[in-house]
Image (cartoon, rainbow, N blue to C red; front, top):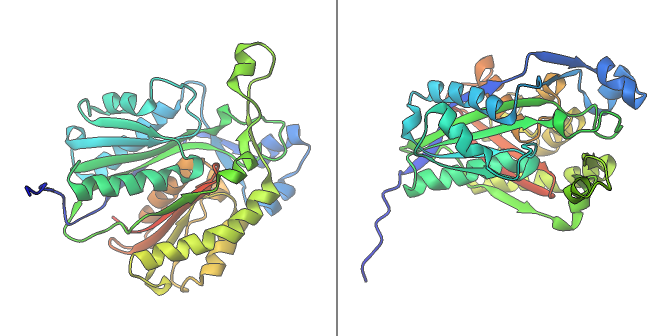
Length: 331
């Protein structure tokens, strides 16, 4: 039998990161008025002190382009070397065309493949798992992975369960070939029976038919909190084991920035070593859904707390309900 030749690399790794945060800082005091709350209540419930909101002329695409351009520059490649662009977002408001091909054109990657990944807060880790497979299989030599969100477009500022949580921004990484694997196996899954816990308030059909208001995202916070504490630590532990590592090998933990209570609870349950850095950008970014992990990853690598080659555990979880985790070597 004639065999298929696979020209893939021995492995793949993150070559560079990039981030974009809108300039407008929104304090707790600003969001608390419409939900009849207080700065103290928001901090106790979420750990959030502030978040960024994009201007009307800033879009999921423009923020993705800004973050992607920085990641490409940091990786040392040119845009035309990208074989695929994966854009994770839950707040891009067009059913079609997809956002990723437009990002590709704007960064000068005119011949690359491009697709959107719709897995909400787990979207970046899903896309990273796909990128790892594409590079390792030889399908693409370099892959751009972007998480970009304009959550302020899909949140009701009067909804007490979501208005104080979310922010806008974008983060990106470039994945390329490596002599040794720098991205561990992705552990992912979903529980569609819980899909209603994070969902839009209605169908777009109600807007079309003139019978309903603009659908906005709703969340059953306590139920999501309990699900996360019950389900996510075992997923993280499986990702560590799948990479052939123990928790003591980790130099950093970069979870989805859902809220500070969840981050700290998972970090504690994992038994991270004392030297491991824990990303807590939720304090000043808010929850930026698919953008939260790459934003935190970029800030962590720039902070000096970790070194190139150090190992970090990434884990995303949210609407779907979906989750994904992997261990990566830092660029």
